[in-house]
Image (cartoon, rainbow, N blue to C red; front, side, top):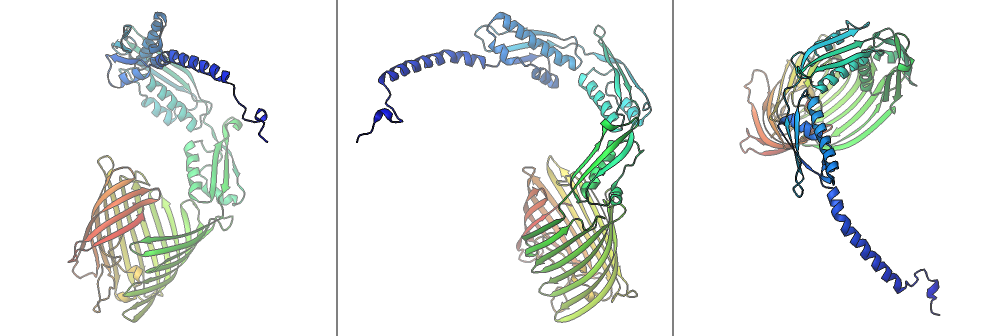
Length: 598
């Protein structure tokens, strides 16, 4: 049976509809053609030329004109005249803000059919200058040092041009200072600029009432786990202490560095302030207790390596923490377990109790170390300090011969670092010194004393380039060198030492031709980075150094090369190719590292 076309979803459309639609489309197209010139005309933007002004003043006057489109779209003389007067007013306002109150502005309107270029000839005249400045600060804080410093630094002084923005910025700074130091009821009673336009002089009068300075009131601590007396060790504020917003910023930073909290909110409760005190709310939310991590990587020094570890950010309500790490590579295997106890200043002072096992193997020397240590670490400003006591046993194997030793070794260290930017320093200085030693008279198999010094200097050159200087010195005093574990012997060569040479390949050899390490070290490096972008640089470098025995001739080995460096949020990825200049065949070696500059 044939389908019923009348009931189909796709019905036949009569021919008359096409005739009507064609007429409608032609009418619509004609209307569009007729409207297009008008639309295009409305979208034209007038070009503005201002003569008589230069530099920043010209830029500000041009930017202050907002009627460009209206000037081009004006269709009647009356509308055009109104728009031109608006443009003149906008130019005049930009000049007044900068102290020019007697400017003469002459507009030039293009003739019919000419290009829409509107020219404004400006004779700015002489600026209004400051004749007198009267700054009055009254109230309990009238003699407060920060307010007195504000008066001394007020940016508009007699003889200066009256610039409105500098006046407003100064007032804003005064009010910001008041809030910062707890003068919450302060107010500006008088703010006047009296202009004598005939004399081109201005007098400024500001009267500021400080009110009373508030103190910290009740400190409300909102958290759900830690002992209150433990968290109070972070505090740098107490009830009755004068308010200073910088205190709250420091306290926030202390909590942030502890790694205990995912969210920290500190707020003065101004709506609840009394006559002279403002309560402070501290809201803390804990991080997850445990963090697990695993990774696999590669370095040209150690080859393929894997890591597996766990951090317990808090073991108990007193803020103790625990961490463990397994680090495995062909040449170096290490296990570390550490327990950290916060001290009186938990944000900078900690006691760390740890167990460490290290197994280092190469073709010549195999060295295993088992040890426990207790170390106090603390920070004061840019200075980091530490001292501790390390008990360890060492088991060495060299040329088939075994040597064993046990040591009770006090240690101490200090470092200083200053940088203009932690993630990407262009100007920085770092210096570190470490000492460790033992005595036969106290448990140890052999007496020794070791000192290490390292330094890094970074200098900016041109717009983004950098010059990096690095250096290391080391010296060990010991009679029986064979009992020292490999980690207390000195070597040079590798990714972070003299590039162009294998990892720890530069050191003295024994009579059997085995690499044994040295009791002394010297190393230096000069590197220049040229940045194509902020993140990518080409580098050229020269390294020199060696490990040796004190009293022997110092034979420095040299390496030089080029590299490509990429700045990442967690360090600098370095892809370097270096030539071993001191070897007869001068071989090339690839060095790939990821480490921070300091």
